[in-house]
Structures are given as structure tokens and as C-alpha cells.
Amino acid sequence: MNTGENRVAHFLNERLVEADSIEGESKFLDSKLFKMVLLGNAKLPLDLVEEAALALHCDARQLFRMAAGQFYDEDAICLFERMLGPPLTNEEQMWLKEIRSANGGHVSAPSGMAKRLVRALAKAPA
Image (cartoon, rainbow, N blue to C red; front, side, top):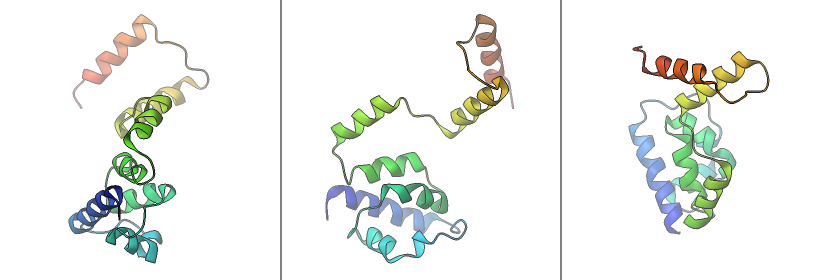
């Protein structure tokens, strides 16, 4: 068992204890593989991180980064992050989706007016 597997197992076990309920019907969380991951005897498959995060009400990005640490060293993970761009929070992704859907096509660089409008909207009380 390596350090990455220990971190993931510890994190997932904490989430299970904290979770009031497990979201939806997750076949993966009921699997033998997940039980092995919880014990630190198996790596969390990267393609199942999102399902586990959703079911356990935890940050998928944080869990994915830890799970990637089971397969890659820190330098490789940092390289992936640089090449794939800066991380976006769920809220930032919602803003971006809204901008893209409102534009209906190619999104050009924001004008001065658009920048001021976005700043005003972002600072507006909810």
C-alpha cells in the first residue's frame, strides 16, 4: 500500500463517516473494488472518481487529484494542471456555461463595457 492509496482511503473513509446519506444508487460504492479502495488495498480508478464524489458529497476535483497521486508523482500532476489550464470552481463553471449559452456561438474577447458589466454583476448582492 503506497502513500497515495493511504490518502485516498483515509479521505473516503472520512467522507463515509460524515455523509448523512449516500446520494443515489451508486453501484461502485457497493462493489468489492470500492471496499478494497477503502482498505487501501486498491487504487481508486480515475474514471470512477466523479461517481464516488457525487455519492459522497465531496469535491470531485480534490478527490481526482488525490486519486491521480496513486498513479503519478506530484511533478506529473502539476504538469497536467498547467497543460489543461487553471481549475474552475463549480460556481465559475456555471458562469462560463451561462456566458457560452447566452452567446450562442464563438465567444470573443470581452469589451470594456462587458468587463464592467460582469464586475457589477459579480459584486451585486444575491
